[in-house]
Image (tube, rainbow, N blue to C red; front, side, top):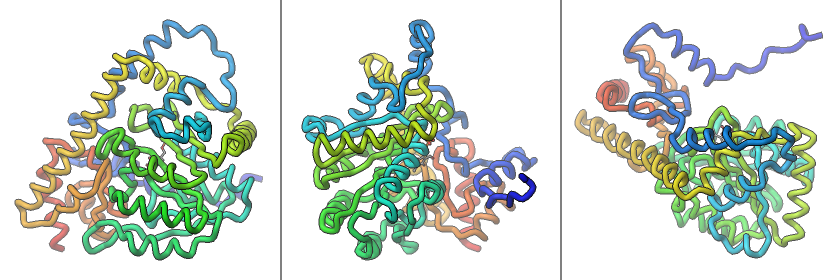
Length: 395
Ligand SMILES: Cc1ncc(COP(=O)(O)O)c(C=O)c1O
């Protein structure tokens, strides 16, 4: 029976990872994989996480089931991180549900939409995170794209985006990223968030905001400003949050769906429908990572340790962006886009041939679409990356 199964389309990111591992050159540089790395090239366990784990290990008294909606304390803490003291919370129009990572948050949100509103189209940026379209299609939603990045200056094509979204029908979903857009590093400015809110209100669209890097761009509160404004303008909205990067909890699978409804009754209905989707899928989320986040957020000292660690990640990314832009400028090459783009990724717009040249001639690995993980840069490799980028730019 299984012999009839056709091989799946290859995962280009996994293929790139194996290619990097197989490359015998000692000076190879990995700017492809999408995880945060420190100045020594490691993805360490945060000190706040280690301490929270110690406390959990000492105090945990049961491994009983947690329920489809997950850890209530985590859900409250996650909601505060995402929305702060947004008035919709006091109005009883918000519910937050724990999920296994941001990926599952997006998937169960997609399942909820497909189940309740069959035939919905989810609009997403071109390009976007590699898993957005497969996840929404698997849920049963139609997928369409809106233009996002201008090749000329590697900035936001706001006019193109809004013009194409005019074709969206009432009830369609607009998927946007809260901050640190993956793969481009190009974010909506305040005026773009306002234009998006106007459009969603006027056309009756449902915003689905993917919040995977809160605190990596301008700061924890600043990075949520756009989505919070949007939540104040539209009757209903969904936010999916990943805690993989911000708490360094990748493999623990920690995420959340935040539902904002038009009334307390409406959001209660959405939460109940989401619980049913989850129950029929993975039943309930894993506990450990969410417990870690809850312990950190509820303890002032640990919270401060985490905030300091998050801020260190943010400022390291900023420093690497500035240093690479300066190193490129010193070679007469344009790196201005690096300091305009934000977060962990920059889109070089190099094209596949130049990306291949970077890899083959210089042992510098980017993803095929030209996405560069800024966190892979450090003082030891930055000049070589600048040299390689300047050389391929000339070819
Ligand atoms: C934009 C975006 N959304 C969601 C995710 C999902 O993250 P996870 O499932 O690891 O929490 C990622 C991970 O790379 C991402 O970049």
